[in-house]
Amino acid sequence: MVIEIADVIISGLINGSVYALMAVGLTLIYGVSKAFNFAYGSFYSLGGYIAFLLFSLSFINNYFVVFLLAVPILLVFGYFVEKALVAPLRKRDDWEIKVMMITLGLALFLDNSFQVIFGSRMKSLPPFLEGGFEAGDFYLSHQDVGIFFLSIGGILLFRWFLNNTRTGMSVRAVAQNPAGAQIVGIPKEFVFAATFAISTVMVGMGGILLAQKYFITPMGGWDILVKAWVITAFGGMGSIKGGLYAAFIVGMLEAFVGWYFGMTWTLIVLFAVLLTTLAVRPQGLLGKWG
Amino acid sequence: MDHKRITFLLALIWAVVAVLPLFFGGTNFIMHILIMCLIWSVVASCWDLIMGFAGIFSFGQVAFFVTGSYASAIISAQFGIPPIFAVFIAGGITAAIGILVGLPCLKLKGAYIALVTFAVHMILEPVLKGDIGRALGTGGSRGLLTIEPMHIFGYTFTTASPVPYFYLMLLVAVICSAIILVVIRSHWGTAFLALKDSQEFATCLGVSAFKYKLMVFALTSFLTGMMGGFYAHYVGMLSTRMLGIDLFVTLMVILVIGGVGKFPGAVIGAFITIAANELLSPLGPYRPITMGALVVILVLLLPDGVVGLFERLFSRKQHGITH
Image (cartoon, rainbow over all chains, first blue to last red; front, side, top):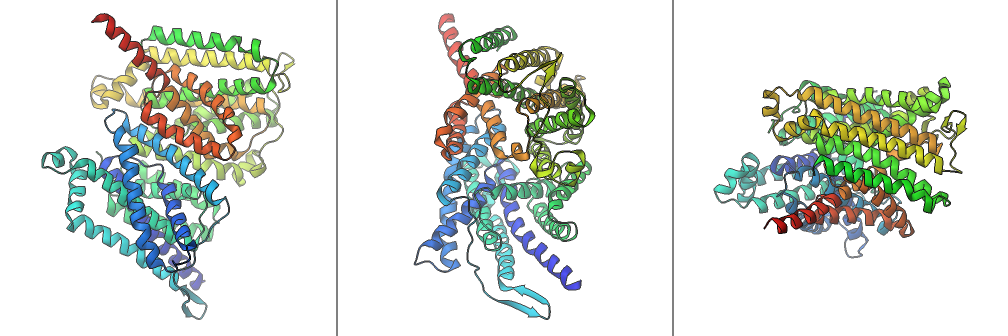
């Protein structure tokens, strides 16, 4: 019983950490540019498939090289998606709904391209660490520990980027006041594209990390989109700290509900909690209106 | 577009559609597609009303449609109510659910509303497939396979001869679009415009955002649920596959092609999209890719849809005359 609960807590923590990485990405785009990205889940699958493709090359056999190659690919991809699809819509009055529509179209395009290119069968990635800690019945794989620390590391790196680099500071400035940021000479368009690119990297990384434990499927991203979305709304859209708390709460909730009531109930309970939170606090845990 | 032109355009569309069976009446396959066009034109118009006119980012339209179709099928099967009445009861049930969903949404903004309504969509599948759904009679993951066909005054509509059902659907679509038109023309429509432009200012002038937004939720979910019922009794079987992303995107493509907030646009969009979807079917697995690419390209090139394009051409001409 105790071991079981410990297992549940660990699985909640690990999923929570990866969710945090992905939710921070989603909340970042919303916080900075007020755009909602429906293709976010497809970018998750894209990350997984890029890693899968890289591993299928004979000379690549460790995750260090994969990360080194996947990050620039995702960064460039995200940047161009923003520049080509989202930026032209920004001039319009009803651009919010137009952005939702165009990213939904992009999601459909990407998901079905994956289906055609890779087939609908599940793809898996090799675990990046073998073995595990053992103590009696208790088992903790090195892989899980690695995923946890990589996700947390990613978030900390992102935090460092926001607080200490020039680009990071301009991202924060644009999030606070787009017009003011532009007056003092911050290139707003570049910041929008850069945040989109960074969030693409974050969710793509999440895809590579989780694909080792679960699998990559063409439509698997929708589940992730909904979860990341729930977490960002729960924590408050645009609030990174709120997203972090919410990610761990959702990870734990999911693990415990899945263990106690069965997996089919997780989504229902998740939404029940979300609706209750939004009924009491419409702006989410730590969100602000505006 | 002014109201007179909307009315004229609608009348023209329905008149053209009404004579189509003269050419295609013999081909059941084409009649079936036309019936689907009629059903989706109403559902898409409702979505346009709530999203384009009222400015509420509701993503629960497919969920309301599926709720209505299941409700109608279950009511007619379990209580022996004739389908023609069951359809309206299903509309009522869907409207009640629409109000329930609408209530929390009124406190929320933009993307949050999209999330809550999309959540309804996501939850519906496990609910319909799970124990709760099975207790209600949804047939679990197998779905409902034998739904009573629609019959009025002893006449039964069958899929084997779809022309009569086509005219029934045409009648329903005409009535529904008339209702939507009346809503847009009445002080509801003006209130929505005011609320969309500036909610604070409109509320100060005494326009109740709460009342109007709840009313639009109730109305659109009633009509959508009712269309779901008509769909269920026509097709004769239901499964949760409708909740997949395909249908949702098709509905979105209809709005993109027709133009958001350009009312008869959704009707035109429905006919173009459903027909294009069928024409693209030889592409097999490449069809959804093409649809996705089409959405992206159309949003970029034709942001106001077909109707927007016409408006642009028309206003340019007018421009030339006045100068």
